[in-house]
Length: 185
Image (cartoon, rainbow, N blue to C red):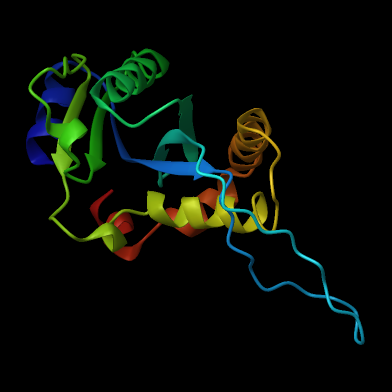
């Protein structure tokens, strides 16, 4: 992290620390507990249709700003497109992007934009990435107990989830501001 801060200072730009991850959303749903009036049993639809799309996301715990991109799959080309979008959005800042070590994050074919540096978390430690908690928030608030009829319906729900997250930066900060992150900023 020190190298990224020094590089940003040399260029006269601010360093933005972001955490990134991708998650799969689809038509398989897992019924979750919900509230219902006493004496009634809630009816919750369930389905096992194996159709998925991926949501790539990055979060800045300091200010709650997020960047999302809906993609058809999880591979190097999709991750490259996400990096390009992220780079353009913060073109006047340097970004230290903290992420897991998935193969598409480490691929030699990846062309890293000039204003992005990657920092990999230790293997098998998703609990260190606050982005994981935002996936839980999206699943709980937007996708809870829905049986979606098509992949387009999943895409529509994801757009709704993106708007929910983008409109609530204080909630995002409260979910992602882990103590070790706050101390390092």
